[in-house]
Figure 1 (cartoon, rainbow, N blue to C red):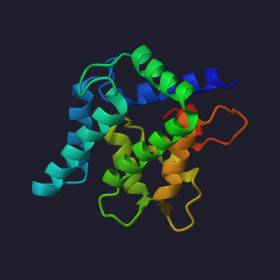
Figure 2 (figure 1 turned 45 degrees about the vertical axis):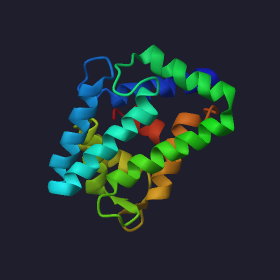
Figure 3 (figure 1 turned 90 degrees about the vertical axis):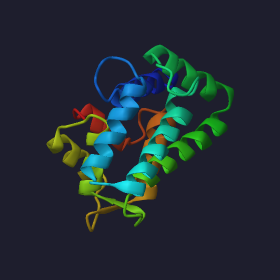
Figure 4 (figure 1 turned 120 degrees about the vertical axis):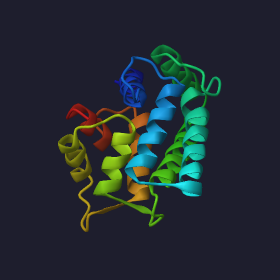
Length: 181
C-alpha cells in the first residue's frame, strides 16, 4: 500500500515512455514519439514544427528531469519522482497537473478541449502502443457519452495515476495498463 503502489505505477509510466522498447528512455524516444505523432496527424509546416518543439520541451521538463535529452534509467526516473513526491506532495501533484495539462494540450490538435477516439489512438501510438483493441478498451473506460472525453477528465485520470497512493481508488489508467496497454 502507499509508496509501493506508487512506485509500481511509476515503473509502468516509465515503460510506457520507452517508445522504441529498448529498455531505457533516451532522446530517441522523443524523436520517435513526435515523428509518429506528426505523421499520424499528417501535420506539416509550422504546425508540425510547433508540435515537435512542444513535445521536446515536455519530455525535457517532466521526463528527463535531471538534464535535457539525457538518457534516464528506470531507477533514476523513479527515484527522481520519489524524491519530489516525498519532499512536497502538494507541489508534486501541482507539477503533475502541469505535466499532463501540457502534453494533452499538444495532443488535442484541433483544440476542442476534448479527445475523441482517433486522437486517443494516435496519442498512444505515438508513444509506441500499437494494440488498437486495447487502446479502444482503455478509451471506453471513460464512458464518453458522445464519443468525446473532456480533456480535463483525461488529465485528472493521469494525475491520479501518478499521484494516488490508495489502491482502493478507481484508477482508469492503471486499469488500462493492467488490461495490456
